[in-house]
Every structure is written in structure tokens, then in C-alpha cells.
Length: 440
Image 1 (tube, helix red, strand yellow):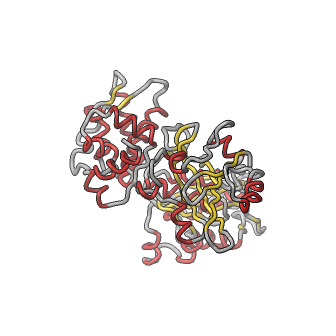
Image 2 (spheres, rainbow, N blue to C red; image 1 turned 135 degrees about the vertical axis):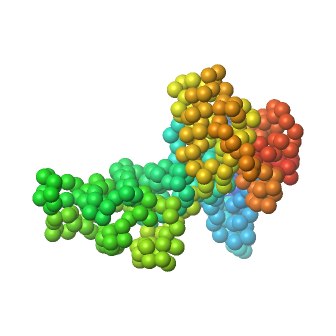
């Protein structure tokens, strides 16, 4: 490879092969040490004169002093060592560009006796999301967000239908677009069909199109959205609102890949990847006879749960910064710690949409560019305030702050250690473990 630090002759053919791979790849020994890195890795995660050879992967990628599993994260090497097979995980890595979501796939290399000689790790940067404030991508770093993003990365390259499940305002259309952009159909159209409020007749004509004279007012031939989506992705938003009688024709479309315009006898071939979304309990609707069981099974081949905002509270500071940056019009706007605390204490029944609306209103009231508690809706976050320590202590470690950010915050945070843990959405024990891993 372009850079190598190993004396194991068994690995030399593998290292030479990986150098020709276009994706970033490294070779690790069982003690987490980077033995080799190909040119693609050095370009994306290292530098021309530094490939991190001899360094521990957890220190390079995360800045940790111990392996990932010892600070509450999924360690693919530990899983691969146990199964003697491949493992895959989505992590937030430190890169020359800052923190980024990275899809990590690790495979063990076995010696002649079946023992693990080394590991090959392939790293792919996720382009559709970011753990930093952004103007045009999915934003988040919590475990709940990362779980949905990891599922998206797995299914996007396939042709399987995807069903996005979640409350209103959780960003289902953004996730659907991210599925499209990470798929082989990314260069094709992304067509949105809002199924809510459409009558059976209107739904059919919008979806399949119609011929001239098919009904009163059809003065010209119209192409339907199925044809518009040819070569791309068809996103059926609020799938639970599709009229029951129309579900039969939709099932036929999905099963056979064919349809007919309204008023036509000609069968046409469809060419789209289906992504559907709903906030309704489809399984319950099937049991009640309000949604066809066969259609449900067809569209739910790969369901992805999109977390409510209250399930990813540690993302609220990042999301707030994102929304304020997107709508600021060049004018910098900041939140006081007290205002941010109020945002994190609220349950957000309207999710991301509600948070954005609250911040848009607060921005208009903050004449000096500083949003204070009095600029927020009365009572927001006061009743039933969220208790971070109680929640995090009984659940999994969720936040994924980068080492440099955590070091800076630990050095500059004006409150107590307990208040810092609450600000991060962690228990004090979790904060202590993370700081210890960083040598602080």
C-alpha cells in the first residue's frame, strides 16, 4: 500500500490489493493499531505525509484513550472478534474537515489456524447527514438519530421499498430524499405525492395521469406522477391516508410495476423506487380493516423509525443552531443558556417543525440578536420539565460529542459538573467516563 507498517508476510498480497481500492481502507492489528492505509484513506482522513501508522484507531477516529466499547459505543472490532465475521456500524469520526458521520465496515483476516491475523476496515463518509450545524443536510449526533441514519445507509443502495415511521414533524421527507440521494437512482427525479386530503378520483388521476376526455374538465392528456418519477424515487407521504378503494390499484402498481392512465386501456410500465411515510399506526389499521394487509406487507419491507425530538434531546442545541443559521438572513442570533435549557425541557409534540417555528418567532423578538427565555412561548419547558440525569441513567449512552468539543466545553462551561452533564443530556457517571477516556 501507499503506507505500510507490518512485518507479516501473509498480509503483503492483501495490502497491495487494497491500494487499488477507490474507497478509504486501513488494516488494523488485533490491538487496534493501524498497520497500513491506502491512498484513498490518506487523502480523506489523513494527509500525504501522515497516514496515522502505528496509532490506535480509537485515538485517531475519536480522540479516545480507550477502545470505543469502553466509553459506551459500538466497537466493530470487538463484535468481529467474537463472531469471526464482518461487522458494520455508523460512527462519528474526527476528520481533517471536522466531525463527520462515517459508515464503517470491518472484516477479520484469519490465519491458517483460524485465528485473527488482522482486520480490514472500509470507511465511507455519509454525505446526506452531518453532526454539525448545516444548511442543507440531515442534522444530528444522538444515538437515536444515528440508528435511523445507519438503517438508511444500509437500505439506500438496494431496491427494497422503505417505510418511514414517525410522528408528524420528524423530518420524513428529508429522510426520504436522503434515501434517494444515497441510492443508484440519485440522478433521477425525486417525486413527492402528498396522500393526505386526496379523494379517490383525484388520487388516481394525480398518480396515474389521464387521457383527454377521460372526465369532465380533462381537456388535455396529463402525465401522472408515476411517469414523472421514472428512473428515480416516488415518495408517498402520509401513506395511511390513501383511500381504501385506491389501495388495490396501488398494490397492483407495486406488485406488477404496471399502471394505466385514467380513461386509457393501454398498460404502461413503471420504473421507480418506492419510499412511503406515515405517522399513523398502520399495523393497527390493518387489524381494524382500515388498511390492506397485503399492501402493508409490500411497503414495509424495510421500516425505519424516525425518533421524536424528545427521544433525541441532546440534538436540540445543534438543531437550534442549524435553524437559526438557516433563517438568520446573515444576522447572527444566539441562545442564552437559560433559553436553551427551556428548549431542552420541552416535550416538543410538534417535533422539528415546532422547534423551527418557535425559533423563527423568537428571532423576531430578539432585537439584540440574543434569544432569552422571555422570547419563548409562555410556559414552554416549564411544566413537567425534563430530568436529564434520571433519563440517561436508565438508558443507553446517547450523545456523541467530539473530543475537541468536549475538551473545550469542559474548560469553559460556567456551571458545575452536574450542570454540564445535564447540558449534554448525560448522567454524571457518563460524563466522568467520557472525560476520563480523554485523559481529563
